[in-house]
Structure formats: C-alpha cells, structure tokens
Length: 356
Image (cartoon, rainbow, N blue to C red; front, side, top):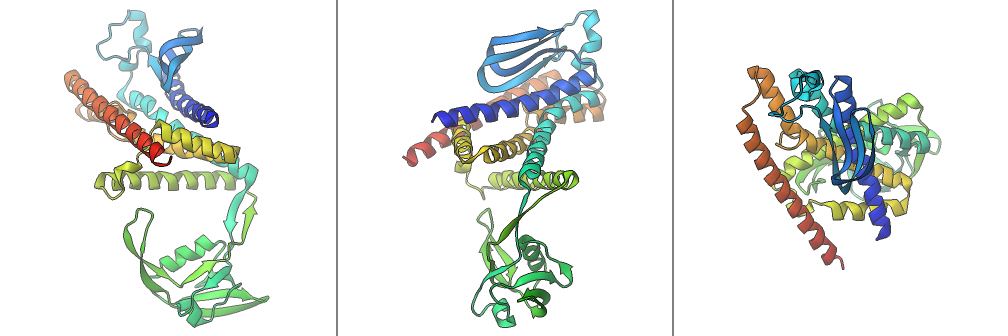
C-alpha cells in the first residue's frame, strides 16, 4: 500500500511539474508575467517567491496550475502590468502558451523513452520460427522450426514484427521467404491465408497469416543517440495513435466504459510497476504522460484543448468569443469533467472490491 502511495505521488508530481513547466516557460518566453507556479491546489503549504512568481507546493496534490498576469478576461490591471498580461498578447501566442502544457507531457514521454533506450537498449524478437502449425501455409511450403527468416520478397527482415507486418500486408499474395537453415540459405514460396481474429479492441478482423509462431529468441540492440531519439519518437507516436483510437472506440461503445480508471487505479498500477523496477515505473510515467497530453488536447472546455479551440475561433472571427458563451462552456465542461471523475472513482472502487 505504501509503495503505491509513494509511486502515485512520484508519478503525479512528475506529470504535473512538466505540464505546468510547459505553460510557464512559453509564457515567460512571450513576456507574460507569472504570479504563481503551483504543484497542487488549495492552501499554500510552503514555497519561495522569486521576482514576481510565487513557486509553491499546495495542499491538494491532484493537479497544479500556473497563474498568469491578466489571465481572467474581465480582470482590471494597472497600466504597468498590461505589457505582461496574458490576455493582451496576440491570440497565437496565447494558444501556444496553453498548448505548451500537453506538448511538454509529450516531451517528457520522449525523454523517458530516450533514457530507457540509451541505458537498456532496444529489445528485439529475432525472426526465428518456433512452432509451425500442422496443415498451415508455412507447414505445406516446408518451413520448419528453427528457420531464421532473412527476407520476404527480397525485403530485409530484422525482427519478428517486421515479418508479421509484411505478411499482414500481403493481401494473400504469395511471398518468397528467404531463410537460413543449418547455415544454408533457402527460398520458399508461401501463400498466406486469411483468418478471422480479435484485435486489441475485441473487434473481429480479417488477418493474413502463414501460421507460425516465434521461438521467443531475443536480443538487445544498443542504440546510438540518433537511433534512440528516432525510436523514442516512434514509441511516442504509436502510443499516441493507440490512445486516440481508444478514445474513439470508447465513445463508440466498443471499449466498455468500465475500463476508465481514476487515481486509485493509477496508484495501484504505479505501485505494481515500482515493485518491478525503476525502468517499468518510468515507462508507466511516459505512458500516462502521453495519455494526459492527448486528453488535454481534446476540444473540451476547461481542458487546454478547449481554450485552444476558442483561440482558433477568435483567430478566424478576429475578436474574442463572447464572454458569456465561454463562461457557459466552462461550466458545462466542469460538470462533464466532474462526472467523469466521479465515474472513474466508482470504477476504481468497484474494481478494488471485486478483486478482494
């Protein structure tokens, strides 16, 4: 229990800090005055004021915020504060300041992946055949256990995943497997067959296969700085894409809403990953950071994406959106967010008691 609590504080603290740091740095870059940089909400526990900014730790650790000069639309400012006012900056600058929060969450994820790849390398499953299903396309073509797949249709295969993707994209067309068996190269033609299977979202899909499984042999590839950076970008992109698809599937009802998790679920997962090791906990932070970034970019009032949406409208119509409209949208957004949080807590509690 204590491990979960500590891990949760670490995860939340890192995520909040980077998110608010994004807002803070870009605000300072554009000359906006920052009055408060807070980790947490509510009463100030302790902190230090440097120049205009009060850097503080607040009592409620479920978030954080950056309070900028002139942030409120109807705020009356002294004449000397107007050059430092958020609302007196160009709409593009305001949009970039708001977007910097979730963007920095993506940056955090990339930095974590980069560090992991630099320290531990990239695990690769070798394209070595483990089991050949009787009567399947590979079995009929003569592929055997232990065969090392070198290429498909003269396209090099470096990993098992490379091979699986090429087979999946074949559309049933015959493929030339170049393989190494007992030190000798052989070429074998295999025609994939289509099967119905379940994907990650439990949807029935058609997939081309040759009915072989991996031997499980793997190696760790050391990456230089450039390779690690490229792999980090790929990893962040793949998880971002999966997160967006998951949100769409959730709205469509394909993914059950009971899978939504809240702070308790995050704490439990963080604790489990912390017990496995620091690398697992770091990867978990990166995963949650990407999810946080994607959710914040959604055009929902209260979230950063909602503010950006209004800035885009302002850029088009050349004037700020009516204050009353924004206030109503903010109130609706707050209600929706509150209901979502309540539902997530409900799922957490139900999940916790069902596993006991």
